[in-house]
Image (cartoon, rainbow, N blue to C red; front, side, top):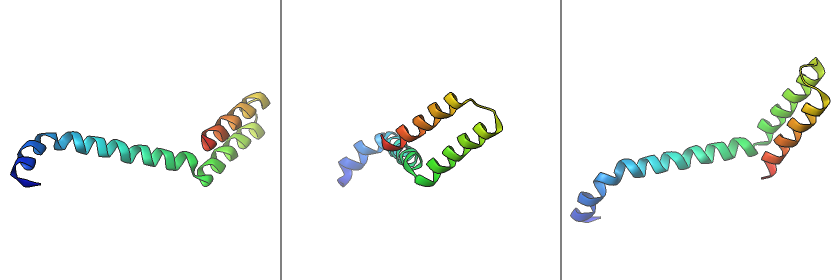
Length: 73
């Protein structure tokens, strides 16, 4: 890297760390959105809410569609 790289790169280090942190967060979000176990849990929660009468059939169908769309997108 050399002396010039250290001198000129050091002020940008916080920005580089922030960018990497953003990338890590994005990877985690993508992993959770596409994790089959997480999707199954969300679908189970919708089914439980429907069975308990907390949501209507239409709301359950809409919620399930949104969950499945997030998984495939």
